[in-house]
Amino acid sequence: MTRAPIEIIGGGLAGSEAAFQLAERGHDVVLHEMRPVRGTAAHKTARLAELVCSNTFKSTEITNAHGLLKAEMRLLGSMILRAADEARVAAGSALGVDRDVFSARVHEWVTSHPRITVVRDEVTALPEVGIVATGPLTSDALAESIRQRLGVDGLAFYDAIAPIVSRDSIDDGIVFRASRYGKETMEGAGDEGAYLNCPFSRDEYDAFLDALGSADQFTAHEFDAVPYFEGCMPVEEIARRGRDTLRFGPMKPVGLTDPRTGREAYAIAQLRMEDRAGNMWNLVGFQTRLRIPEQQRVFRMIPGLANAEFLRFGSIHRNSYLNSPGALAPHLALRDSPTTMFAGQLTGVEGYTESTATGILAAINLSRLLGGDEPVLPPPTTMIGALYRYLREADPKHFQPMNANFGLMDELTERIRDKRLKREKLAERALGEMRRWREAVAGESGAVAAR
Ligand SMILES: Cc1cc2nc3c(=O)[nH]c(=O)nc-3n(C[C@H](O)[C@H](O)[C@H](O)COP(=O)(O)OP(=O)(O)OC[C@H]3O[C@@H](n4cnc5c(N)ncnc54)[C@H](O)[C@@H]3O)c2cc1C
Image (cartoon, rainbow, N blue to C red; front, side, top):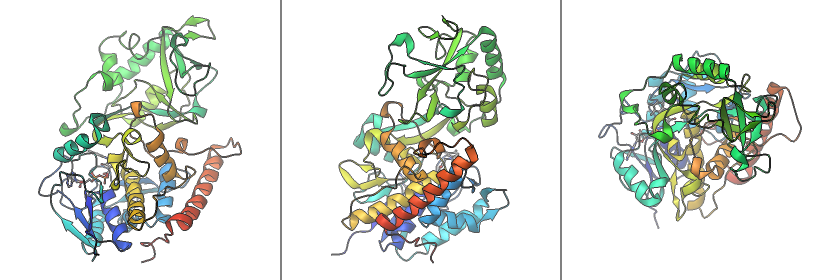
């Protein structure tokens, strides 16, 4: 019996990669892209895999989380990275590309593939066998279908992201662990309390407020204007409402006694654990539109965070994304229809490279499912596996999109103080594990790289 072609919705980074990977595995694919029939507010061309903003896929060094992610994707034969290599421009250790050459390459390879048919239309319903990769600007009609299937909590239209810092960069001489009035609890918090608390003196608070008020902000494109509601108000916007507004809001000190002074501080910034291992801590209520260098400068003024290592920066964006831990199966499919899969930024990963990586995994797993095999995921000792663990295990109540970072990965068994050496070891382990995974379960030899 001949099988109907696989439907892929969205010809961006994830959808193009997934279409190509499936076609290379012998599947017939129809790739639906709505441009130019219907545009988005950010894309400017009709090409597949258009880069909407920056022209870089970030670092190539494996001691950098994005570099490691790319090295793993190369082991899995990423077509998008091969196109990026061919379009590379001088950008130091970053993989910068000529965006036109890049998307022209992807366009050519996908549209000329004998097993891929590209159809220009807006899809408004979920496929039974296919991959939805419609990105942060998913069309309204399809978003509505997703919401009907997953419920209103299943899909968000904006993200309001607070920065995350690594645990080992927080100064334990200043910060103390406690829950407000000893009452707030969370799984695994124990008697010591759920939060890390950064206590401010009055002078420290005043200086912080001044810096926050004068810091340089990202100015949004018009389409990216976010209607602020209380849950996603930028911290700098709250500060602008009055000098005490933060102190009576997200920075209130009540119910938290600083063990060093035996008193309540003038204000408190709280950090909440982001991952079960406790490597990543989220600055509660500090969603922000400050530019990245300004986030580093201003948030390092918080007592105890002078040397903070930022694993994720804050942002506020127009962004359609699924509540993956609350709504999807671990291989990012509908729980009641394992061959209706999702990939790309829509799944709650953040960034070009992360989105593309989920396109590769979606193709591997859809191909396996159609061949009668179970879906598989790399272990959390790899960067891709660690991202997938985040997508299935993060707290659905606080779920926010995530980029690749070392805080997501399993710790080494040995303790290494030197950061560079530690990352070298983490990367070495990850690449070894990814090779083993590829050979053992995916049986992939890098179809694209071998061409
Ligand atoms: C304004 C903006 C700036 C960004 N800047 C950066 C950046 O600098 N660096 C970075 O790493 N990330 C950036 N991102 C995030 C970036 O969009 C993603 O990382 C990446 O493009 C996601 O890839 P994707 O394949 O999931 O989605 P996309 O690349 O957006 O592809 C989705 C595709 O689906 C199509 N589509 C949507 N709905 C339908 C439908 N119903 N039917 C058919 N087709 C449909 C769209 O036209 C689009 O071509 C930015 C996002 C936005 C919105």
